[in-house]
Amino acid sequence: MIATTHLHPIIVHAPLALWVTVPVFYALARRSAGSPRAGLYAAAGTLNLLLGTVASVMAVLSGLLAVSGLSVVGIAQGTLSRHIGWGVATSFLYLCLTLVRAVGRPLADLPGRGMVVALCIATVPVIVTGYYGGQNVYRFGLGVDLVTATERALHPPSPPRIAPP
Image (cartoon, rainbow, N blue to C red):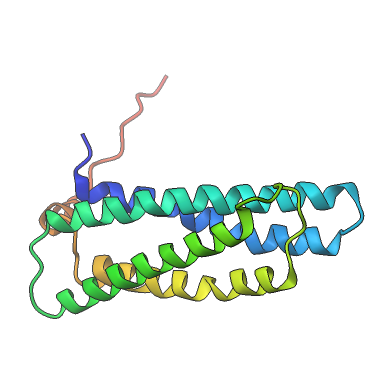
């Protein structure tokens, strides 16, 4: 069974991967306007935007669940608070962009230039959120069993021995 603190890093990569593709698909849709592919690119971008936003809700919930099981003290509290704040704000930003783009429109509608620019700019809070998340794990070891990790690093398991034929 996976500990609740280990679910968040697994889930959080889904919205990241989906959101990063959206401005690419939308730029391709705008560039190929008039061709049959334009609608496919626009639909792919919109679906990834929708799915990424749904996945971000799960990422926020799994993050909050993970935090509830941690004992955080000292300087790590500030970094963790910033990660949570940026994560919630980023998810809310993408929810707003998703509503503007997807509500009442066919998936294949070409996005406006402003939407493409907004989605490119929206990658900045994604990066900031990830930066603080990385600090939480790699600098402060939050959610990591450091004793077990250190033991494995010092005494790695022996490679399996293969018997000669």
